[in-house]
Image (cartoon, rainbow, N blue to C red; front, side):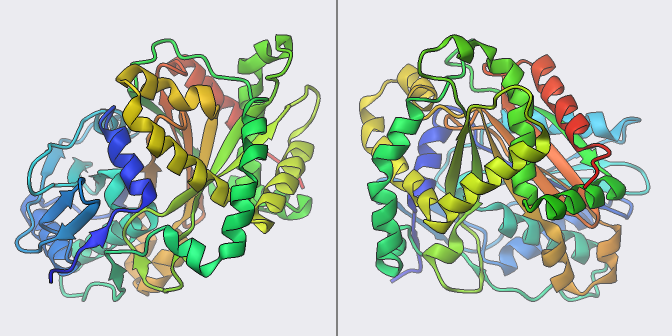
Length: 434
């Protein structure tokens, strides 16, 4: 019997979302060496083959997938150096967000783009989101960069679990958590009815745009010190900053009789809840922690962050984020009965979210390598929107820098509005004092 995995609940929904629009995250590592495209192609192929990530076959009818192995096909393109690397990477990310992967018997869920910068290059890994979570991709891309820098150095030693446990394991391992989350669904439904809905300019336009911020070491240290002094996490600060930035865009909510709250979500990796293993898990295993807030005028970032922290701590303590899985399961049952237009607007109507936050700290992953060349790497991450979340703030800590990549659905936010959100976040986080 061949080795194969079962698609979990989130993977199945990602494949459904993919039928509406590409769902492709983009990770980019800066490699401090001159670009040799042929050598890079060989390194990529060797790492994919060594980790057993070639020859992917997906059977959506059976809900299964299998890595057949064999020689890896490497889809690598090269872009020449430009005077403005920041703009080049932004254009690259937007293009790859909106470019579908080709459907075929053996899926090719990886694309690579090298952006030449003369004395260094940026290597982008674009992947079909149903195959992998961000932490596994960060390890893979780090592997490729380190091996490229010195082919004599053996690749980092870590174990990759290609076929993870399914979400139903939460029921078996934590039945109390699951029951509490199930019984909390009516409360979640009531909260959804109090949330102000985002208006889409064109319901059938799922294309993505992208803007970015970079917090330098001094700014990141100040942000972390503020969080410690206020008793909140970095994630709380990011959610509070988003609420501050989104509030002026939702002023019409004050004219509503009931729908006056703005809802945002923290996108969580719940591998530890599903499986007790310590191996790196390839497949995405995600849940959403939803925070709904009135965002009244005249409240500063400190009070807002502490309010977010109180709400998120209570939800985490009761494992209420698992309610999002039951909600996802219900939407999966309804999905086949919806036409394309209804699918595009389903979550906007029934699960109104304005934005989501996802965080990834590269430093623990990089410290595991024990390689001094890590110091020369930098990392940017961009996570696309889907039907559920029209704006995604991907926060990535690399060394002492915090990269904030903002993906937005163009039908929900114009480029000018997205730039304004980024500018508001920059003002919120700049020169903070504990």
